[in-house]
Amino acid sequence: MKRKTLILAGVVFILIGAAILIAFGSSFSWKIPVSSADYAAEDYSVTIEQDHEIVRVTGQHLEGQNLCVDLRSVSRGRAYLDVVDPNGKARMEVIYVHLFGIITAGQFLGESTGSKIIPILVMIYLLLVLFSVILAYRRSTRQTLYRYANVRYLGWIIFLSIMLLLQIPYLFNTSSLISTIGTTLSSASSVATIVFPIAFIVSIFVAISNIQLLRREGRNWRNLLGIMLGLLVCLSTVLPSLLSDYLQSSTLIDVHNERLIWTYLDSGVTDIVLVSLSYLECILWATVILAGKAAKRIPAFDKDHILILGSQIRKDGTLTPLLQGRADRAVEFARMQKEATGKDIIFVPSGGQGSDEVIAEAQAIKNYLISTGIPEDKILAEDASTNTYENFKNSMALIQKSGASDAKIAFSTTNYHVFRSGILAEQQGILAEGIGSRTRTYFWVNAFVREFIATMYSEWRKHLRVILSLMALTVFLEILVYISNIL
Image 1: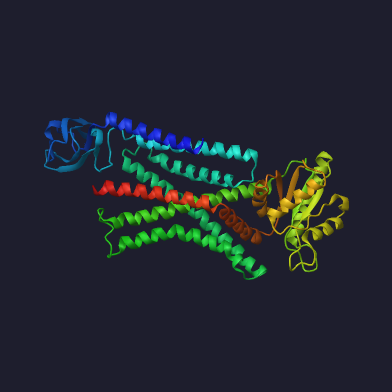
Image 2: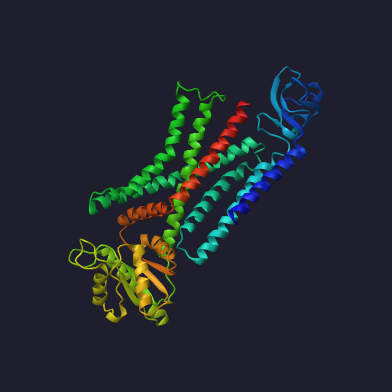
């Protein structure tokens, strides 16, 4: 479904909920637990404190272990209902009458007749949104795996799925708008809490791999990206709780007073941080899943050309282990295709000459391919590129110049780099399937973190809009909670 359709569906669900509340909300039965069944309903004294007639008692009866006081609205306002049992034990409940005569009990947005439908409507709407995102994800991945949109779709699928699972236990136990709001906020912010143990374990693994990286590759802030990301995720998860605990124990601010705004500022800041973190973590896991899927994928054996994406070469012009892995993976794919279909493939090593390189990366890869027995007439070197985007752009221009305008393309790069490389190709309208070469674990982890950061940066405006929207929605719901509790 399109965004406008989902917004329209949301409006329809709101109207359905409002119609049900208007139709049934003018009457309400307040249930009070009774300690003894020895008394009749008439033995309980029921009085109403009100400036003018706001609600009217239409009857009272026993229902199991509950005394039910039946009310009907008369006019808008607030009243206090007092019930005294035969032993003199009293209980009071605040009653609100809203527009259209809707009665709520306990809070301004408390329980009312028909309000049990509200969490069900919320659940159905979230399921509708989830179903829509799943369809969009399947449709997009059928066209190509290499799209940033796929990351967003899968991230939302993870986010919404966890939210829905967390709300199921409360589906039939939630009977008011305010409790539905609380459950929604809790489930959204709890995504970060639930994945925290996994994030913590992964952070330890990342830290260990980064230590190995620092020992073998040298001290560099880029080699600390894994540790930095792990610390950010863990600290962002626990800091709101630590701040809340501090405020709860502090004598400077009485957060126990429900009428003071500090209580809601505390919970609001906590929910805003955790909801935003939940979204980012879901995007992170979506990136991990899709990058892993892209790295393990084997292209169809119908390719005419295979690009080998260049990287830094040694000072003597030979290939580093990382770049040799890419070349070997391309050779391996060519062999698998030849054995499966008998079709040969043309190698397209791609990469220009850096200021600290003795020859172009493409030439270095070409020399290596020839040394492995690849005929020179099966190699088409592209030696002008300075980055991955240009690798595809210039290589495709070279392929088309050679007369193969409709060639089927594969590309070989390191496993952590396959997904983003495919995206850069797709952005140019190039249909190419990637194959990934292995690298050392300690290097792969940190390199993947860099890829994740690059992926996030490429669509930072879209992610920022989502996070700001989530923040705004969280603030709005917190304001409703505040209003409901202080009125």
